[in-house]
Image (cartoon, rainbow, N blue to C red; front, side):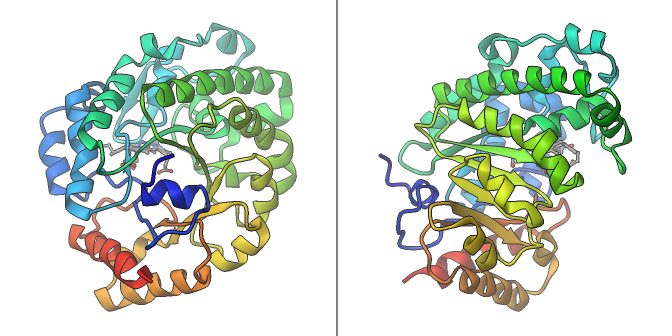
Length: 340
Ligand code: CP3
């Protein structure tokens, strides 16, 4: 058992201070990221292990975060399923999945062959971080991956995936089964390569009603989590899930990620003492003056009320034009204010 503060908090054990990291902590708000990124495309960066490792390390050096997250994207493992992927800068699939024939054409690759660069990046990072910070691997939840695969890109109303769910449930189920199996192999391969925790991002899990979440989303996430190598903690983040935390809990993760629409203390009461939580500062607070950032950090720590099993984080990814020094100030505040 590792005694990294972050991993102890994931397991619900008492810690000397509240560990903190930021979703999307490697990225465009950091000039050092932009320097690397200016020389290649985003996908080239993901596919070049030395560079992906370099930008993963940047926020650890600069912010002093308590965990690193692998630099990649939730959509990288979808490309070797047979869907050509581009970023412009949002993700685009040239040929979205719409018919049963489209689903049948999808391949479930061996992750070491389909995305060897991800596994190599993890191996490099484990050597680089030994004794310093733990490494989080990640993937998209089956539903969020399906949203991009069916819509072909981001969407405001998600009409295509919802139409498939309601009008062609057999195509939807076949697609979700295939994605879930790809994801299971992909995430277990990350653990085998050295990832010390796994985060599942369900960015779009909150766009459906609680009834539809239970019927169309939860069964697949639960099946995925049930199939994961549980020698490492699993963090499950569903954006917009404030009204359905009871359902999210049923998916079976060790840690539930919270966005900023919920009171962290109330969410903990709902989830119960056995589940750790991660969150939940509104990402736009990092635009605010330092005094306001400090007040908000204190409010969230107070809502947690000293309960073990809290990992401080934003309620969603850091925004691209946040001043880096504000992100660093936030990390320092969490450490200073939470020390016993
Ligand atoms: O957290 C990290 O630092 C690790 C890297 C990471 C990226 N994407 C890098 C990235 C992680 C964990 C992700 C997850 C991801 N990707 C999610 C789930 C989390 C969330 O934010 O909801 C989603 C929905 C995606 C899909 C995606 N990738 C979108 C919608 C976009 C475009 C919008 C945007 O934020 O730029 C991307 C591109 C992307 N992924 C960038 C980065 C650093 C920007 C690419 C660039 O440098 O041009």
